[in-house]
Image 1 (tube, helix red, strand yellow):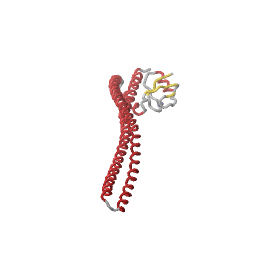
Image 2 (cartoon, helix red, strand yellow):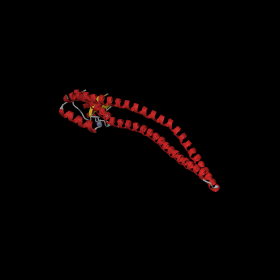
Image 3 (cartoon, helix red, strand yellow):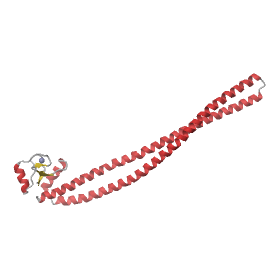
Image 4 (cartoon, protein in one colour):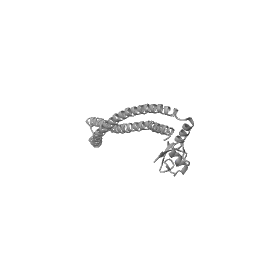
Length: 234
Ligand SMILES: [Zn+2]
């Protein structure tokens, strides 16, 4: 194989590696965003569970004060009962007290239901708290892992870039230009094998004189159909 082609193959390998590393680096912010939305998700589930508990408590307190005001009314009626001399009025007050007591019983039943609902909410909050804490811990670890990964990718890129620069300096300028243009436009396949007389870039059978030239290995020979640089295989 032509030494120039061997050099280009190594260069192509490093360029592919660089392309891969760049892709991985580009994915990092997306991965970070994913992790953030997972934390936010469990956080808002916890907030919703807590909010429901607060709403239950507010409603229960409202009912409590409704009972309180009714009891005050009963006290006043009882006072009036003591002061009245008229039997008719006495009966009316007794009836009114009875009505209010019935109302109180109804309100207290609803209060009891709310207390049961509050009790049911407790394990839901505890579970949501546990879930949120676990997710936060997990995501914190993943953040650290991702940061380490990014640092490692950046270090690898520097290394490969330095190596690539050295390799590129050894390739003749025109050939390097051709190679770089092909690498960019032919999906990172600038130098390809000619296998069983078929170009592995465009998968077209090469013409006889091209096959001979590639096998002879005296000059850099491109595929007549796709322009990729060919090297012999089989
Ligand atoms: Zn081709």
